[in-house]
Length: 157
Image 1 (tube, rainbow, N blue to C red):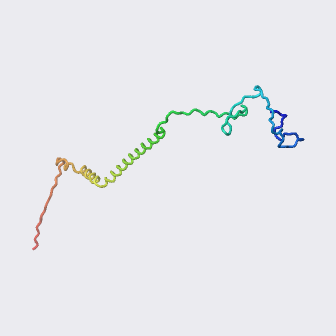
Image 2: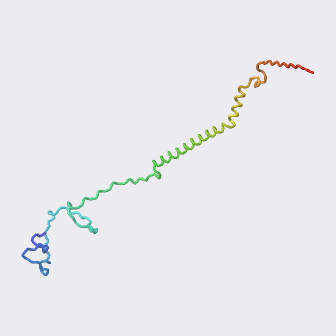
Image 3: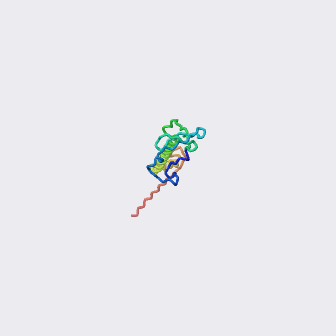
């Protein structure tokens, strides 16, 4: 810019007073000549209203870094880890149900043994302890039994 031309009324010399009707205030200031070699690189950036405006490169904001590319391969319908958890839950539930069913069968069998099964066990034990002659049809050892019957008639009369 030209440093000799006043741009604001505060830049006017102190001797002059402010006169709004003065044409000196409204006269265009001579444009400063800017050589291309004196100017640094210029970039165009959007302003607050979306218009592109020139700005010296060293004053421009840093560019936004490009985001890393995303992986766009399709994902499985169900997560493999979720499938493993679901399988473990179903398998564990089936295992627990099977164990519970087996334990209930053992308990019901133990409860049922108190009734009829003990009677049958007693019959088997007694049959095993019976004499072999009774089981084998009388071909066991010989036992002689002598029975003596003595009758005495007394008549007191």
